[in-house]
Length: 472
Picture 1: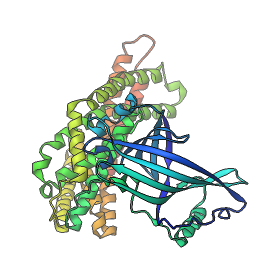
Picture 2: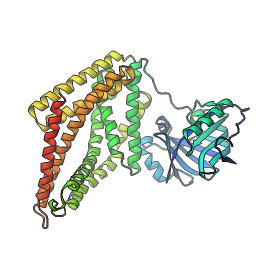
Picture 3: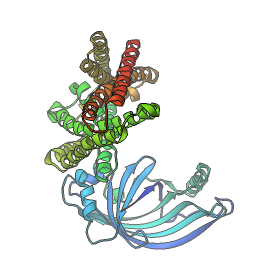
Picture 4: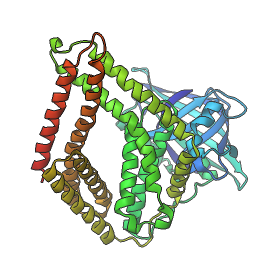
């Protein structure tokens, strides 16, 4: 499997369109021309679950890119994953898509034939590819329709913004217009429309939910690829859970049910892995600060082995969970919400503001109560309330009062950060105490350095409490 970051612009043009001269866009540049004949067969589930999440899978023949290609959304473009050409989707590809396809079979949904005139614009002096301009004559068909059209694709290379402005201006002057379609597949087989609430407030709520669903889906693909998107995935789940709780009365409760509990189950599995990662970085950074003479015995290796002994089984539990019917049921709900968000169509701005204010007041009360008692568990509850208040404020941003919402979000983010640092000390203190007890009974080790680490955590905890009191 190979990975490529793809950045491209698409332009609608008529049959009589004449591609403008491209040779003088780069001073001293030159253009290489080639013609290729491409056939792409697109695959999806019968319910088009991949396309609903902006994911495209195709089998391509006809050029040096022949093979299986999976395109997924990415910041600044799309990530393209490639496999060698085979008659049917490789097993590693179908397994990668389990959470998106929901375990359903993948079948061909459309065939697209393209005759491509390819122009590669190069900077001769720097010997760099600036851009690739494809003039495509397309014929496409599916079970539903067949059609033909012409379009221009511009794939970005290493050119400057000024270069692309010149190229864009030249295409516009020649009669090209930004495409209405994000892909050739959407031209012949439009994606299922996303249900949009009638009110502006409802649309803002639906958009926020959709953004978290997209992040969770990206996390699913990343985890199955062996990457480590655990933190981002947990944050998206937290935001989604917070939205379900704070704005529950303006959501379709008959659809939501106990979905919060299901999200909490999977987030807890991810948390077991994440806690080990955080603790390892925390302890190694602390040891780096200690004078060498105070690090007695194989402390670093002991910490690493102890935490790996917890993290590796935790990762295995995550992998097992992601292939379970329970997890696929979660992904099924998210798939349905992506095109049919559970938002009451008449949701008003006033309702969202009132629910947000309620979250703010609850966060304030919990912080006051927690600092009055000093109990770690109550401080942790105050942290979670501050997170919900922050996320609720994020959702209000598109509805106006940008300065006020920014100030409020910053306030609760500060509380969340301080109490988050405190919670990290709670978890770390328990872990280092456990390791100290183990080291105290192991030949060649002693608990001295662990005692220093424990004392350091206690100092950090007290400083966090002091900072939190200043936030009242």
